Figure: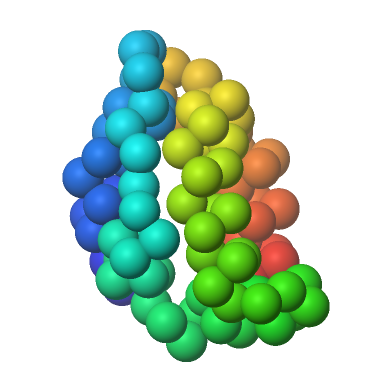
Length: 84
């Protein structure tokens, strides 16, 4: 299974110092898959297009603020894995 970082090269700056590169809703759909994102939106009782648009805006800063020295916090990663 490919990781988000393999599908979205702009994720590297999210884990590093400096400005975060944006991701478009279309890039996010291509990287994560239409079905997966629709399922997440459905779980959250949100419209898929709105969910993807909001996620594309918030994901870079969320990853950046929850990573230290280029690594995602282990507790956060475990919690996200349990949710999936």
